[in-house]
Length: 361
Image (tube, rainbow, N blue to C red; front, side, top):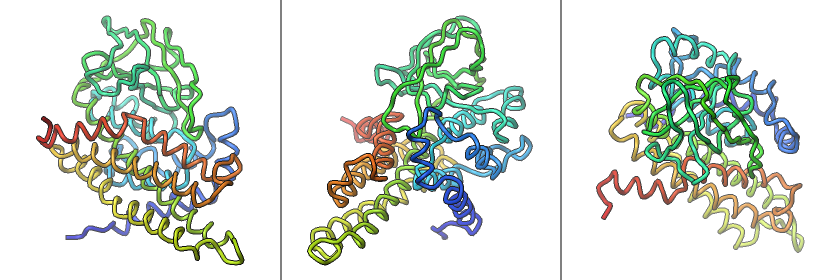
C-alpha cells in the first residue's frame, strides 16, 4: 500500500508553489494585506488558469474531475504562501453545487465556477457564533430568504452565495439580486476578508439535496482549513529555523543556544507528524463517507491548534521583532487565528469527534 503522494500530486503542489513564488511572494502579500482591495484579481485569475478553481468539477462541466485530496494539497500550498484570495469560499460553493445541486443548477454554475468566470462563496456562520447546520436561522418564504449571516469569505466580490438556512438546508443567492446587502467586516486576517450578508426577502433557489450537502460542505471546509493550517505551520517552522541560523547574539547565531534548539525541535515534532490527519480527512471525504465527519473534525481541531502554537513559538524565536508589523510572521499568526475560528473552534469539533466516536457521556 502506498501512503505517499502520486507523481501527479507532487507536480500539482510544485506548480502551485512556483506560481505563488513568482506572482505572489510575501512582498505582494504585504501589499494586499495593507490595501483596500480584498485580493489581487490578477493572481486569482492566474490560479484559475492553472485549473485550481475547477479541480473538483467533473470534466463534462469544464473541470479536472479530481478529488478532495488534490484540493487539500493545493490548500496546503496556499496556506504555506499565505495566499490572499477567495479560494476557500469558492471551493466550498463548488462543493455545495456538486453535492446538492440539481442538474440544471450544475449546468448553469459549475462551468463558470471552474473557469473562474464566476466567483462563488458561502454564507454559513452567524453572529451568535453558530456554524452547525442545525443552528442556522435565516428563514424561507417560498423562493425568498431573509436573515443575516456573518463571516462570509470574499462575499463582496462574489457572483453566487451558498447560504445556510433554518432546517440545515442550503440555498443559492445571486449577489446582484434585490434584497441582498453585503457589508465588509474588519477581521484580523486581511489575506482572507470577511463580509456580513443581510438578506431581506432576497430571491433564492433551494439546493435539491441541501441538507446532505450542508454537512458535506462543512466537512470539506474542515479538511481544507486543516490543510491550510499544516501549510502555514510548516512555513512558520521554516521561518523560525532560518532566523535562528542568521540572527546573532554574543558572537554566535541564536540557533546555537540549547533553548532555541529545543524550541525548534518541539515545533518540528508537533507539526510534521500531523500531516497525515488532513490527508486522511480529505481521503475519507472522497472514499469513506461514514468516517468523513469524524476525520475532518479531528483534523481541523488538532491542526489549527498546532498552527496557533507554531505561530506563538515562531514569534518567541524571532524575539522583539516578532511582535512588530514589519515582521512577516504576523501574516501567518493572523492566518492561524482565522483557521482556528472559522467553521467553529477546536473545542466544538473535539466534542463532535467524541460524540461521533461514541465517547460522549
